[in-house]
Length: 392
Image (cartoon, rainbow, N blue to C red; front, side, top):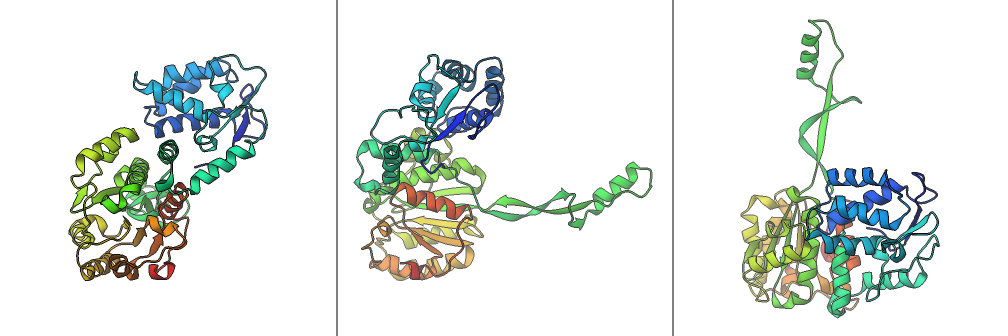
């Protein structure tokens, strides 16, 4: 995700100035559409770029209609397309009218101020200071204290979050031309293709795969103010790596909600989650639910993320015992507690005190910035830290 700073580029006859080139800007727009649920796949993106090759890429009207006719798959995509176009590009460029001159201001969605209209185009190489300041304040604000409009803006930005994943070595091999172990099968095939004559020695190396993430989201009554935002974060992670992400809800029982979160549209995904979760705003039995998770093969070798405030209705010693088992099976155990964002917070409840000795990372989950930091941790951009109790 961008850092809230407006990106201004020149689109001029297939050339770019100091900013991003025109192809990069337009391809980024297609990625933003896919993140918002529009079926702007790679084939449609190629058609979009090919259409603009016959039009004026500096004309907002041409870009708007070329994208609308090539990137949208049906009538349901049109409202999302209009919103993304207005958010991605500046207000004057979003309007389907002729743009004077050859300079077009392109503003990333995170630079749009919450509770305001579309950003104004100024032709300057950066966004106004107030816009960046308001976006930064929104990033760090507790979602439980936001207005409905501010919360919608945070949810929109979460839908654009890129949930990269820490790579791990795969058991499968791939061909290599820069060293590695000898690949006997490929070498013998090469010799046979040359009639038995000596051929070049073929080599292979281990490939990489994204490390699996298992996320458990507490949907009990004490987490009501944060559950929706954390589920939207889980939706972004599932969308980024659908084969390497499993999500469960935790209340009075453990419920697998990964199929519900595979909807591209965040609104449809949240509706499907509401229908799939039977114990919204109830109690929490984390010890029983962690034990149920350990009966499944998902946690072994994965990064396990538990998003909960630690209010445990069951016995705390059961939760401690199951967390000890989980720490031995999982690659990493991350506990996300929204209340940790408060500087005055101390882990006093029995449940969180029983779990903390077996937690690798104890992080906050109360704001957009905290969700971005969690995504960076899962991508391997932050070092592994053992002993979550010290971080409390």
